[in-house]
Amino acid sequence: MSQLLTLKEQIASGAHDSAFVRLYGNTDDIISYQRTRYIEALEAFAALYPEYTEVSIFSAPGRTEVCGNHTDHNNGKTLAAGIDLDVIGVVAKCEKRLEVQSKGFKPDILTTDNVEFCESELNTAKALVKGVCNGFKERGLSFGGFVAYTTSNVLKGSGVSSSAAFEVLLCTILNHLYNDGKVDAVTVAQISQFAENKYFGKPCGLLDQTASSVGGFITIDFADPKMPAIEKIDFDFASAGHALCIVDTGGNHSDLTHEYAAIPSEMKAVAGFFGKETLRGLNRAEIVKNAAVLREKFGDRAVLRALHFAQENDRVDAQAAALKSGDFDTFLKLIKASGRSSFMYLQNVYTSLNTAEQGLSLALCISDGVLGERGAYRVHGGGFGGTIQAFVPADLLSTYKETMDSVFGEGACKVLNIRADGGVVAIA
Image 1 (cartoon, one colour):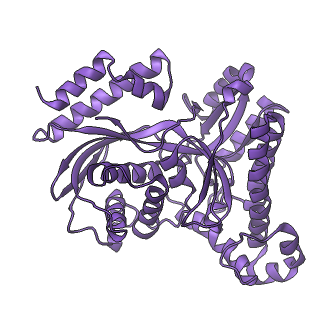
Image 2 (cartoon, one colour):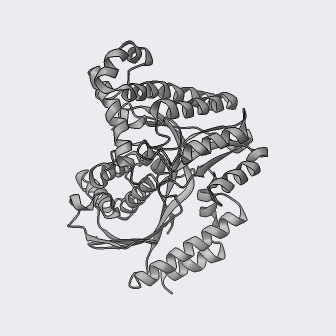
Image 3 (cartoon, helix red, strand yellow):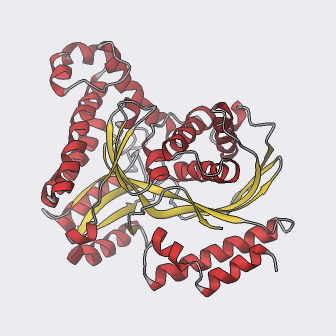
């Protein structure tokens, strides 16, 4: 019997349930779902690549941003976590062939001697495969061929970073197949960001990739983006009587790269006025003192976004301190303050190009009505479309889910669990 078939039988018998518990949680429904999901992925791989019978299964999580909205690209601070939504890949090692077949998409096929940038491949998964391989190559790390079948439940275009999870998955594959798993999580994040910036064409910061690569509930200080300072925080939202939810409003932000790009561009323009490359180190008072000149040179929105950065950076420290001291009420107040700042000053809740579509604004308004003075809610991730985040008291969770699903569709409201691990070999 081939190793692939043995693996399939082991999963069906429950031999790998401990891996599922660690990555996804310990309920019968979760374990049953993941067994089925992994077995279906193995079967799909076997149908596509019958010549490969020795496989491993890799996993990389999506992420949730808790605070630090649009601060990472200006060397700011963030509070984030890996979550139990992930992309998994059934993978076999080979010599030069590079082929990634993602469920529902055409395969991306190339070879290890053709991983250079190609402008016509911008905004494609193939560009990310090339970018990750070239990222390993430029750092003097080993890379080589593999075939992979991937499937994801990280919601595309919804602010939980499906692209970062895919990039980290690719890095994790190369790390373990060709580098004995010795490439550290921060380097994996940096290579992933390189692939997205240079090959895919999206000028993201390092938050998404770091949260996916490291896993757990973490603060990240990007003062030195080459060596971000990461601290894990041991906190369980369930112990505070709250569930962490995201609500998918149905808007897709995958075609709004120009909106995202404008945020770091405007922030850095303001920073340049002070002789800096980024806003890190500037405080609110300095920006306000020079506001008259700044608004004339760069426009009001750029000034507002700079002020958001300064205040949001301080909020990350305050939120981390509140969680460490067990002051959950202060944490919730700071979540709401972050949400207001993103809406009013950062202005990433809806795009000015399509004001008729304001799903995030509607979801925030409805959240306010259901939760009142309890819990908290804010735009989630990059914004402009996709999801909001909410911290919902346990006794209101059923009402909140029902209300959100009635407006945005069945299953729109999802309860997230924090995942301890980043990119890993899930089963080998």
